Image (cartoon, rainbow, N blue to C red):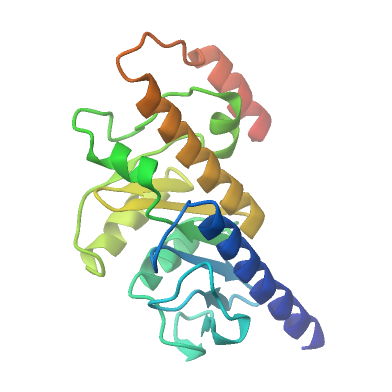
Length: 215
């Protein structure tokens, strides 16, 4: 029991630290975005509704039981199910980051991109940290139909992009989820900067070699 309490205190502080870092560097804004982390007993800690990631209180984070029941803390975000769906499909996930980051949202608005893999493999770190980015069709925020759509896409990738909304990214740890989300946003920025230019993304062979090392 003492170990769980110590783990929970550490994760609460880490969520606050990561949230402030993302907010201060303009990866999120206002009260947008949410972060969660999973304890070793299956319980979830999550940023609450109407909370700025730049001003979180560790004691007020929403807490869910392993069964998905809100048991403590402030009122949870209506997007809690996005996190829960990722955990259901990604057994090794220890954290999930969901942002409304500008460049990633812009990618979700471009017509004609491959919905099974929206961004080309521009850099090795994008391939290693994100790998594949499928699109989840648009549903209004909080719509329960979005849950099944996220669940479907999460079976094939730990990172998905919600149409007209933003990315949802799972990682083995909170830092891993954070870094993958940041890599996704920066690659989206590169992609938008290079539109209209002839580009040299990694070849299929180079991409596959990187993914093989990740396995």
